[in-house]
Amino acid sequence: MHNAIQPKPWDKVCLAILPGLWITVWQSEIFNQFPREIGSAILVVIALGVIRINLVTERRLAAWSLPALGGLLWAGWEWLRWLINTRSLWVPWYFRFHARFGPLYARLGGIDPVLPVWFVFLAVLILGTYLSYKKSGLRVSWSGWGVLGLSGLVFVAWGRFIFPAHWLSAGIALSLLLLLASVAWGFPLSKREGLAAGLLVIVCQPVAFDMLLFNFLHIIRVYAYDSPDNMRLRLTLFVLSILPFLCFLVIIPIGVLRSRSRQSQQWWLLLASLITLTSMIVVRSLTLQGTPNAFSLDDLIRYGLGTLQLWLPILFMTVSYLHSLGAPQVSVTHLEHTPEPVSSK
Image: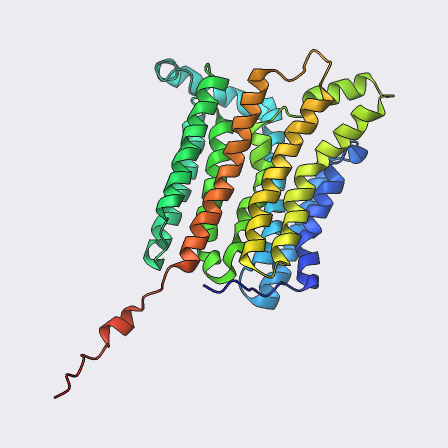
């Protein structure tokens, strides 16, 4: 397996990070008064423009356009949150669902009855992806299955010990399924783009993070607004509001696309993502020291398991893609037309 790879040219890298730069500016606390609907619309225009340039120039999806897909995903997530907050649109339907499946809800020990709708939807997508690419010779290694099993254990531990009353809430399940689905969807692209196809998992991280730790900045935002003269709180809120977008949609894509070896891409995918997730937890804990919301052992376990749940799919992706790239490709036509050995007399 050849280790050296050709880095992407800077013009394509700049196009790749354009949606991420806009999200970073738009989501920062400096632009907190900017209308979110207009921000989402501008993001969709930028992302679709990058994808169109990719398809026109290369006539197929390339790794450098994957951050634009992440921008579209975030815009869709913003729209979904707006729909959820508009209670008049979904609350009547939700209560009708509860009234119909209330006994099942009680017997399942707190599983949200709306969750199976999302669960079946994503499960169908994952199953369809698996069946579509099964004939391509894509296989998961034993180490990949081990990482996948560990991710499942973390998922169960998070739900049972952090949220025992609603141990399988929609945010927990959807965040994990989104990341695992992105690993499956990136498999065919990895045969052509290598580890750079892993950017599809990376750009899904901000949405998965927001699904899993939905109130991550709420306490800091409350303290910052109650103490407008506290510059430390304001600076921390600014940094944490842009850090996931800046790292996952700008810095890591630049590192992966400009890498000259697969080892370098592995470091960017695995180490940079882990540092990003861990640093956000550390900054939040240091900021809340000395307040009633200071980090406790339960918070440490909660955010530690959350970090693992977000990072293990990246490890699973890296192990699986490397196994796929290193597996020998057997040609069926070659086997059918192999001449019989001629014995020498």
